[in-house]
Amino acid sequence: MAVKATVGDLLAFVKTSEASSTQLMDAVASMGKGRVRLATIKLLSWLKLQQRLGRAMPLELDVRHEWCRDLLQVVSFEGLRDEIFAVRGGAVDLSAGLSDVERATLLAVVDTEYQPPLMTRGRTA
Image (cartoon, rainbow, N blue to C red; front, side, top):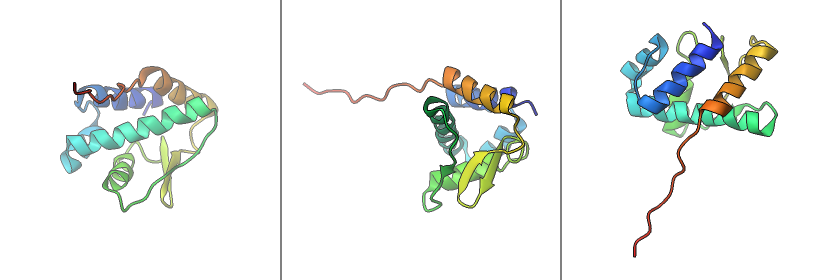
């Protein structure tokens, strides 16, 4: 599985809520679109943060929270776990099997392409 294509699938899913890969289709069938989308947003935000900080860091998860359990389930679908992500204890990290070039490409693509909308609260007069 190509890393760039997989990241593209995750980015497209967040934008459209339409699953284009087998892994995301399986996750949606198992968990529902909303839960998969939230887990994917958290995953992409963590990847973007790593690029912005310029250092690798695992994403520590507290399984008492539903989104944390969902994120673990999403990255566990075949093709995502081991090829791109690794789960160690209560944390998700990038797989040690990724080359430096693949890792840099993945982080750069997410940093460039993942532009979450600014959340604002409307004011009342």
